Length: 190
Image 1 (spheres, rainbow, N blue to C red):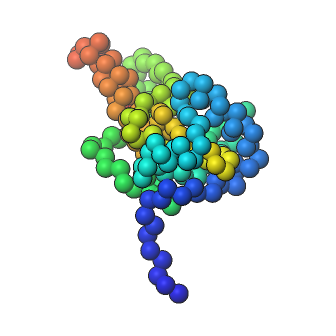
Image 2: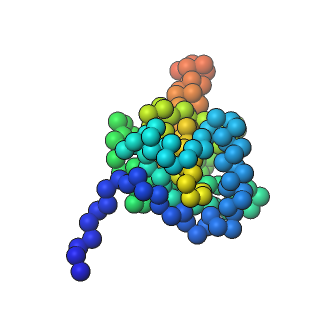
Image 3: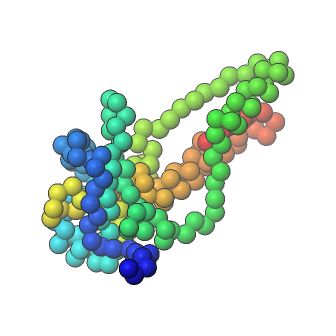
């Protein structure tokens, strides 16, 4: 048996994960809804290959059932290696529940009054625009012969999380510090 070699990025369609099958109609409907918003484009595979050439990468998708909703995950790693080819220019560190718990315990122990606000952004990664020349590396397939190309960031692609973190750090973290002034004791976690 020959040793298994690391696959090169491929333009061949990867089969979707089994988690998609029970939700395929919902995934199609969601894709059409997102296409109407300009977040995706449905193209015949031949047209997608003509438009993106060697930069067309049709990756597998999976579905996470969140009870009342589904989340479509685009696999930018397995077989297609799109995430592996990305080079991060800098790193961001996002604090977790442990850091928040420590801050709350410190405030309670100090006797100071404080309040906390927790928020989220609906479809946060889908709000990050992607350069047109990079759309082809975010393609997936629901039916043979048709490619769905993401025009914005998508879950499962490293670049979407990276650029959302950069945006969030600038707007949601740094901006409030500038507005409040340097003497205010804000603790803002992203």
